[in-house]
Image (cartoon, rainbow, N blue to C red; front, top):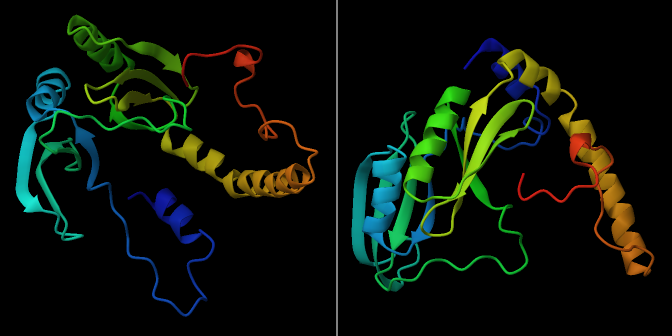
Length: 219
């Protein structure tokens, strides 16, 4: 971890003066797990197309955390930093259903690649296998492509454009911006309870004015 990032971490509010032990350092994502319709279908996508090696499998009839009976095959694909994306095949050929109150583009997981050329190469690989790809999309601090895996999980591949110092500069205003949103949301809740608020709360700042008035297919 760089000195700049260490300083930003130690400056976070709420980490001292509570009488509680300090939070343990969280170094990286260990794994994120989804339900898979079929283990081999999922393996083909993540290993053969995306290049993530199948690295570990756990199989059991009982769930260790809850003790309930639910036979499963739990399998893991390894990323370059040692973290994993993992899946559960519950043996009945069913994928997870989408959330009924959430647009399909909201819940997703993003993986970082090194360059824009890498994004283009991965887009070509995916499209050659019949996968529909959205992008390359410009987010100013990074560029991305979007697609769905065989289980309906929305994935993003991202190439970072902004360096560590630009990201640090942007991080300095994040708490203030979120506090302003929270204050406005509290007022919106009050107005909604009084029947005065119409529709959803809009943010106080539009970071993507080039999309004003448009209905994008994704973000």
